[in-house]
Length: 250
Ligand SMILES: [Zn+2]
Image 1 (cartoon, rainbow, N blue to C red):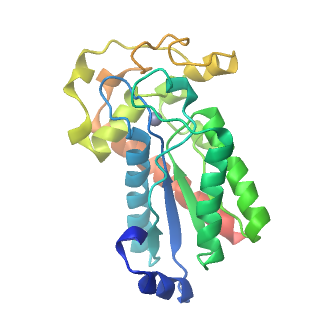
Image 2: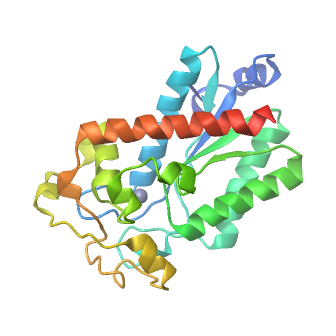
Image 3: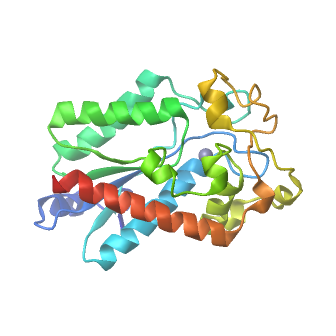
């Protein structure tokens, strides 16, 4: 795996011109409250780890992967009431991702793929809008692996499917697999909060507090394990690889 930010432009140009076109992964996250036990950058860190794991698998198959600098800001309106959360307007969020991806494609990196971990509906919509805008501007498809699509969502954990998928067991397990040193031990004392956030959003709830999460988590952080994190990551790697194959095989 090559990090774009860690090589000089002449090496980037050589990869661009290479017959063996690399896949460029763009990790996308948010800066957003994730309970009292996970860092504000959780979604960005989870996407960076997913990109690393996808790169390992693709490179084991003979491919080359460049990883672009992480997009660590997004629309995060639900967590707005919690300190440290930084939210973009939809127009800024869509333009930011559109410009980054179109810029890469215009320079000759023809296979660009978004790797996302922030699941707020308005954010996912902004990534879809960016994919449409990139294709209109460059004529090239942007790959977007989206775990909120039904075909992927149904492969994920029961807690995820029950809609309690913010800073609960699902994300805490992923963090234990990715960056365990950043998970606070206080998670073990947090009572489960089995609120269906996805359903609450559909019924017009607009903040985590309104949904009943006064500490900015849902689900069961105490039940998280590294093993669960590893098995979720395996599924997410399959999702990204399948999306990459589907996007550029047609
Ligand atoms: Zn998250």
